[in-house]
Every structure is written in structure tokens, then in C-alpha cells.
Length: 266
Image 1 (cartoon, rainbow, N blue to C red):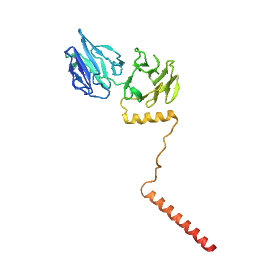
Image 2 (image 1 turned 90 degrees about the vertical axis):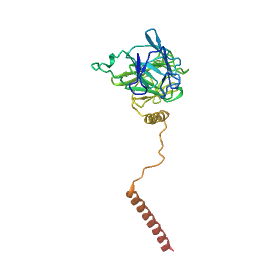
Image 3 (image 1 turned 30 degrees about the horizontal axis):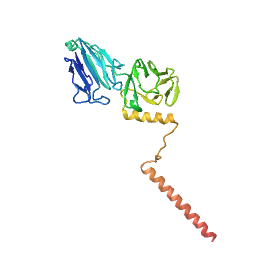
Image 4 (image 1 turned 180 degrees about the horizontal axis):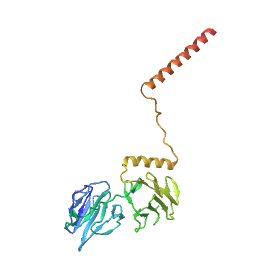
């Protein structure tokens, strides 16, 4: 077997050993110095003729075929593995996939992702495919280990029309742009809050700079505050100069007229 990185983060790795440590540390067997990758993030271990992905920390995000891995997950040829935001694929190294007559199957990015914008989940990004359940229970697709989160708090469903969030009778509620909801349609840029933890709906291609601006706008809308402009735009170039000159002339004329009328009264 071998691990390939179609987005170019790393050269392919032939898995001919028993254990491969994946992380951002230089001492890792597979070094991935990428955002969100911990120094020792995950392990690919050989078990007989099979391979297993192991995660020993729930904060270390990894998924196989769109499903978050909580502890261990058996791997098969063709599986899509995402380590934080780094995409890789397990392939059979027999060489059959290099057959020029074989159709190349490209990994499809999710249409939507949800990114944490507060608390310990700040900056962490999760793909949204099918139905994604959020909660404290280990069986949830995205486990949020926080005392304010219910065991099965809410779910986000990808539909042909877009996204839909449903609160699963949580104790502390699910909110969209500051409004508590039971079921609500979502769009890119919406802020979703589970209790006090805030997340932002994005598409994978959305620049982080723009997403931060959207997140601040959503937070401002949720709190009822509005952005206050620091200055007003003015006319540009010579047009502005003409208006200023006209105002000055009229002001001077009015002042002169007032002085002259006062002089006549004397």
C-alpha cells in the first residue's frame, strides 16, 4: 500500500513498515507542516494484512471518506483520508492504478464546510456531507466535548436545495445568526451557535479573510449592533474642489453682506 497526496502537500509514501506517525513535527514519519496538524496527530498502523488509522486525542481532526475518526478506523484501498485539512488517499501499490486504460477517480471536495470561530474549536474545519450530527456523545459525527453541549445536540443535513440545521432537543439551544431555532435553512456565511460555541458555514474555496469578515458581520447582527462608519465618502477630484470653493465664496459673501447692513444701520 502507499499513501498519495493529490494536492501536493507531500510526496507519496510507500507503507512497507508496521507503523507510521503523522504530524507536523520533523520527527514524524510523515511530516505535514500544515495548519491544524498537531506535532503527533495520527498513526497509520499495519494489522496483519490490513491498515488502521488511530487517533488518541479527539481534538486531532481526521476523517475517512467524510466520517470523523474518534479512535480507530480500518482503512481500505481508495479511502479518502483528511488529516486536519490535508487530503490523502490510500492506494494499492501493485501498480494497477497506473494502467493508462483505467479511469482516474478524483477526490471531490465537500460543497460545504463548517469552521469554528470561537473557543477551543477556533480555526478547525469540518466537511459537511449527508447528515452530520454534533454533540458530546462519542458516536456523533463531530464530537464537541463541552459541558454546555448535549449528547446529541444538533444535526446539519446537506439537501439538494442547500443546508438545513435541526436542533435535537438540546438543553442550551441551537442558534442561527443569534436567533434560537428548531429547524432552519443555512447558507454560506451564516453563523451557527451550539450553546456558546460559534461556527461559520463556508465553502472550501472561501478565503479565510472573507470568512472572518462574514463571521464578524454575523456576530454584529446577532448582538443587534451595527457597524458605524468612521468617515463619509466625499466627491473625488476637481468636483469636490469646485463644491468647496463655491461654499467658501457664498459664506464670505454672506458675511460681507451682514457686515454692510450693520454698517448702514449705524
